[in-house]
Image (cartoon, rainbow, N blue to C red; front, side):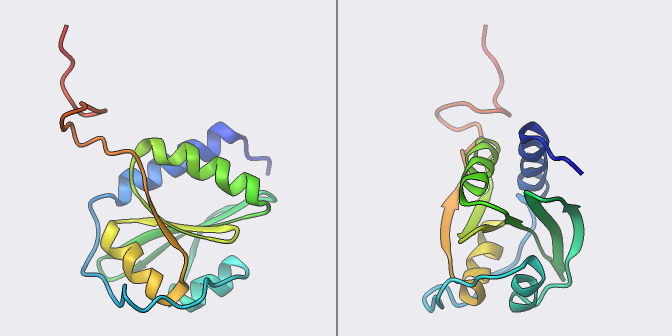
Length: 143
């Protein structure tokens, strides 16, 4: 299956928006282990997730993970560049990202912070479209 950059961006956007309202309390954010590495299945095992595979392509493998109220997307990438392009595009749609070497977890802020206690990685935040001072995707347009 060939996955194009727009398809990947759309998938990331849908994941970020769908998961933005889901989550529970965070975990051991103060104790961050070394950043995990490996296949999607290995990362899922470390995160205690049974992955529901959504995309299985040469450039990206992506699965949904859910345990109780915790929902997130776990994705692995063939290249660092492919990962960074995906993140940069997806961040335009908001969301919270836990980023490791050739992998990313996307979900509610509390969920990815909790995952950081199991997978390590770096927390990144997407663009805020809450309609605050700068407007946003959900803000009313004045004309």
